[in-house]
Length: 608
Image (cartoon, rainbow, N blue to C red; front, side, top):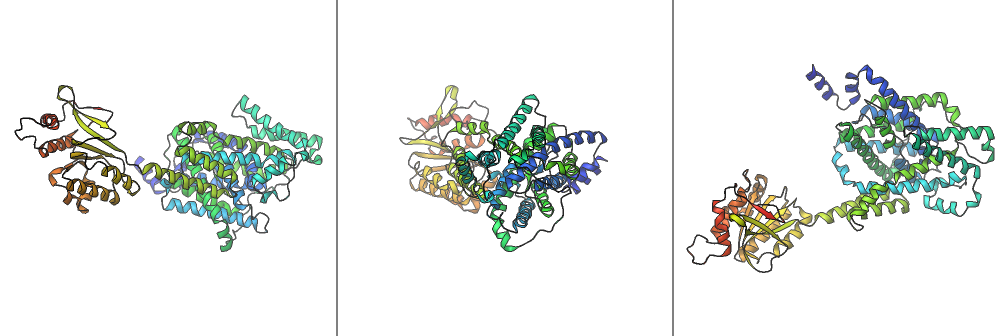
């Protein structure tokens, strides 16, 4: 029976909901429902606030919280991830759409971009680019999140202070901030008071109990003041009427010109959206012990955006706040995510008329705290502690500044990704090489002493290569090896710790081998694995090395290195009846009795 269920689940692995329903138990429902209600309470004010960040009517945030959440929960790899509007994605949407919001077809272009984001994410999942997401470094995300947090907070100042800015949707955040600072005299004290009240209520709720829906309470209390004192007539702007209906189906208007105009933004949003979703899923999975399929999550996020584009939604992704609430409030299955979307839909249908009293300054207060929360101070300190001029620190700082100062956020993302890749290549173009000299220890032990450089000429020199050798590090490999050509009579090139090597690096080894031979030296290669041996044969590198000087990597500990040392002893003619033997020969005589059981020690290096 169990084998049949396993086969059934495998067959429908691309629609995980089928497997969930198949194995669902009655006792799960109450837990999933409680988690869903808690998530919905937080999602409603958040979604409306994020819509304001994106520069659209709050109702579109609620639409996104319904459709995107339900679809992503049906197809997602994670049982606890809650998709929908997020602060970072909303900010990217605002940046990408800033120049189009004044046009008649602005919303058509927005929904088209939502579809394109979904199509790109599905494409990434289908061609299995799950691992490529690792090229977006953690420090780039930390830098972008911090920059996004600053932009969100600065962008909401005008709303918090009740200062009206003409055509603010088309303005960069820095320009809006400058306008606010030069027009502080226009501050509406009623608006500021309500915004501060919301911030205070949220902070107090967190102090009392972290599970309290502070954002919702912080919006409901000011509504009472709005109604009692008619503050809307004193310059306090309200959300206004919200349609009391489910998200309406509307065909996306496909237009080649519009697609070209929003394509760059769609690429950036699709990448950041996937990074958000995967990182949140893996964070929760580290506790829940659930296995996450990155490619399946790509497809799920893509389907969520593609489907929601037909229901007047803007792009969404995984929300850390709502996903954490979902998990910590006892959600057992993906049904909790679906139910949370259903609850938001019911609220929209039956309670939408009350939403018109929500003050915009209160939503601004929610967003300012959200922006502050995006600045991960602990992670930033941790990165900077490593070193201000290290690759991670540079990537973080540049991405942070680019996010704040660049006119388009998608370019800030590309800058951070490009910089992290460049810095990674800079760090990996150095080949880890250990220069070792075998020396005599106590009780006939042989130790390998690591040295930084060889001043004179020695009899035997061990060169231990480590890590993946690829074209980016081939020049450094060639330079390092060339400096050792005349430093020994016999070289032992240890390859045991080289997982992979490409043709460019093999060519660098070929140059070294030929140069050593021309200088009258002998090169012995040890620790050769089967795949490397195949490459040596295919590239005719074996012809430059005596077959007797190649030693395969063996299962026995130290066997390959021992054989190489015995070969070095033979090359140095240590068996010859000399009255005065070289120091190396005296040392290597002990190797002939070495069978892997003798004690081998090492100082400042790994033992051979």
